[in-house]
Image (cartoon, rainbow, N blue to C red; front, side):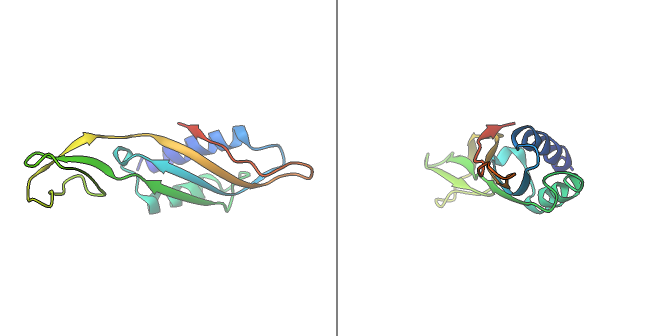
Length: 124
């Protein structure tokens, strides 16, 4: 279950960004399909990893980008959540690209008095 190592890496990133005394309410991640992340497993790993941190109880919102495919028969390019799908013409699909990015798109936090809500972008 590589979701635990991903959750730990994201928590390290978050802890480096948030101000002292801040508390994370939610964060938004975007993952490439090649990361093979299971959203429910990552949410569980996140909750366990964050138990004694400034992110305890926060909501992790994950968007997994679809696979970029190309039909071997007709050449049509399309996207799908399943990399083993067939084209509408019946031809077999092949991968055009396998994106394995993991991007921390946003952190919603409660800041100490006098500080503002943070919006960040980062990559693992």
